Length: 510
Ligand code: XMP
Image (cartoon, rainbow, N blue to C red; front, side, top):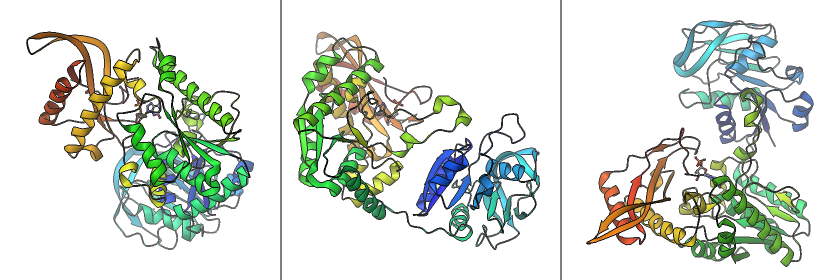
């Protein structure tokens, strides 16, 4: 299978390069900029891409690739800082731009034989850099310029090394896809052999080989990732997969029964439903701190899986719906703090876990998981559902979680979602949910004084959950939601709206 390795020098666009390359049909992986040459060789890529980055090559401590990268004989594309680093190390000269250049520029193509084949003149490209090459290294020639940047693209055809000073991966570069495709197929001669159908085939074979005659259990969370994980494993080993769907009492109204029905009827999965709501509530009694809630919930999930595995006469494998953004080794450019995000699907796995892990989606971006889900027959409504946190409503009840609070919150949340759907807004939003506060306020209903709890409405837009904007909900809709909640949900007499962006807020309250 064709493969591209992307050396990450810390650009905000690195993941975008990886996704674009995959969209063009070539598998790509992101690795730290200083990945040793031996490790690169072991991964056997067909070509390398050096990402952009925030630094200058002549700064002290500037990130440089491991020595020998350019002697591997692999085709290389340098993007922005990636080009500068390549030019710098191969004998060219990088200087600060007189003017830092951010934004659009018009490209003048000087040579259309390789990387820039089919790219029209005066096409808009997206620049974002403070340095530029002044002299190109021996063997290279300039293949495009812009009014402010003489060296906008370079190529060494002999060694199959090339670079662009602009960002072909961003949508503002008009022929960006063409340039990336030229690199993959013309310069590097790779094949477009990455697609979801071939992925399924490969994974099914891998799972079969790994599991042998063993048994696998997979916790279903109600989200797309764990369902797709189960469907792939089911394809591989049939009913030696047992799915476990735990009713932790922290789900939304009706969610448990609806999902069980779906898993069994539609997908013929072997699903064991377990009502553990009492147990979860017991563990959460008296717990206030959000992180402690998460840990208790995660720990109990694992306990339940282990217990069920024993009942099944021992399962050796635990399947998880971990996806690529959870496992990308963040590059050290940004500091050690960003090294590998802990998986929070099940609240982080404990040490000494008795299972071997199976994570068939480890290589996939979210969009790819969605495409895979469609390929496997999951309906669109399920795929486009809003994210729901693993610890469920427990992190939407500020303070102690108890049954009464959960019942109140479920009703309020149900009304909110119903009205959001009715207004045709569901798909426009990343999430819409209610949060229950541990405060009471005075109200008057009929002629009677009330002293009841407050819910907060949170409706946000986001593309990846990393940043978010609160959604300006139309006043008539807010009015309907608020009136319905106060009238219909016993125990709530006040509704508030959260108007905080992320950052500095987070999407969830805990
Ligand atoms: P925050 O609150 O950090 O959330 O802005 C970002 C996105 O992640 C979801 N989220 C979680 N998902 N387990 C999960 O599976 C968790 O513990 C968790 N915490 C937050 C959240 O719903 C939002 O979409």
